[in-house]
Amino acid sequence: MAGCGSGSSCDSGSCGSVDAKIAQQDMAISSSLDRIKNKVLVMSGKGGVGKSTVSVNMALGLANRGYKVGLMDVDLHGPDVCRMLNLTSRLMDADVKKDGLLPPMQVGENLKVISLEYMMEDRDAPVIWRGPMKVQAIRQFIADMDWGDLDYLIIDAPPGTGDEPLTVAQTISDACAVVVTTPQQVALADVRKSLNFCKQLEMDVVGIVENMSGFVCPKCSETVEIFKSGGGQEIADDFNLRFLGKVPLDPRVVIGGDDGTPFLSSDSDSPATKAFQGVVSMVEQVLSKKKVELPMADMGSSCGCGGKCNPDTCDC
Image (cartoon, rainbow, N blue to C red):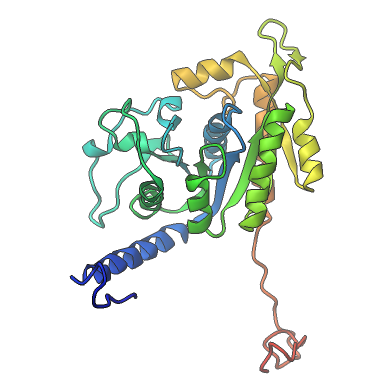
């Protein structure tokens, strides 16, 4: 813990109390994250590619499969998750638990949700914050909420590589990313920045989703490629990453988002819902393989590392 030297700006000794609070919050964050198996940051290089739609429907899709899921909206300047799920409850009306943790919003039995709008008295008020305020808000989302035991925490980030995704990456060391793009080259150019962000921060990328890949006609259900197609597969190949799938446009996606009844995770029989269920299955399959396998010692060996000693690291 840093001390307060004489002549410093914290001669009152307040630095110590601040450091203690940060250390206490670090412990709360660690305690919360230890109970969450998979943390998935959904990000994009630019806005308007349907990243929040993917986040919300991925969380619902996993919850519908029986998993315990959390959805954390860290798009602090433009939170949309509450509206997309028709959640109107407010934190000020909720009961605080005896351990001091705050209850997230609940959707069905398996989905917990937190968004800045949950904490705002006026949801139309602008959030005029600089970096430190945003960092602290995200840390509080993790430390102060009663997430409990989760199979998945889906994190909806704003577009780009700024404070919010950086804070998630630095706070949640084992987070992995799902990157959303649309097929056109302008979007793909920005996605490369997101992928290089993950590379620089050593964050695993689960794969790439190509959203708005064609348009589903509401009359004949045929798909027309009005925004091109194949860009997501192309960039996945360039970066040697998994391609999770192409999700076509469907007018019902927009209607469902506005009405608070997300469409892609529904039971509707359409090319868009079928494609999105394939994306969810791919995420489920990839993350189910991320298990730690510990080497077992050979029964006939007295060596704790299984009889394959490395003289530089083994003290057997």
